[in-house]
Image 1: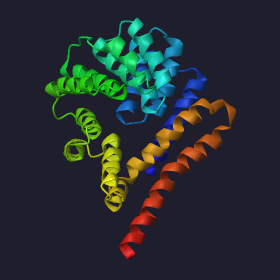
Image 2 (image 1 turned 180 degrees about the vertical axis):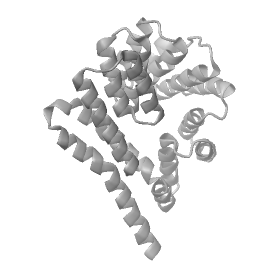
Image 3 (image 1 turned 120 degrees about the vertical axis):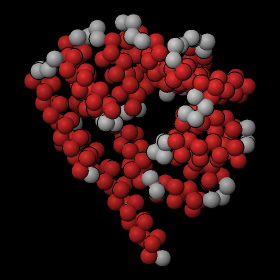
Image 4 (image 1 turned 60 degrees about the horizontal axis):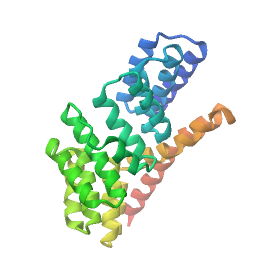
Length: 275
């Protein structure tokens, strides 16, 4: 709760600075990188938009803005910004995996395959990331053999990467190999216990096995993740409607959302303990 309020205060300070028109673009971009590292994309977006108003050809700023927009659930805006970064000759290893994620986020699966499949990148992380997105695109286009081949390529690069394991689990689920899917998700959660996709897929898998109590316990064990999901789901709406309502309305809603989820989880846990 305290951390959330501190982040909100930082966001308000950033808004004030932007409104006053102060700040060097390089300093604003550096500040945004810090906010992104702290999992605070909202404030990063404010900093980056201010920087890009002053320096619209800043490729790094465009790429970071794309990443931040994707983090708050705005793949359309993310694609727009990362394409601008590509046009400004930003690093292909950083740009194309992000572009693939943004396009998948809009269900542009066939476009991902036609535009990005076969593109050669320089680092194992970039190749694995892009291959994971190609696998997701092929899986959602009905091409399971192609999806298996793509994720196998990703696994050769980074076999214990949490995202690679999650995509492998999704494909295993499509193949009705739920036991394998469960093992892969367990490995992903061992690597990244707070991986949202892995938690939700694991809960769904437990539900298919008539283990609803275990699924609920998994979600209850990560109330902060559920709270974060709720905030991420609502942030794009408030982002689009920011100018249509007074600022207190947005802040009150967003401030209260996560604590409400956490309080509900605490009440639920106390109720279970009292039985």
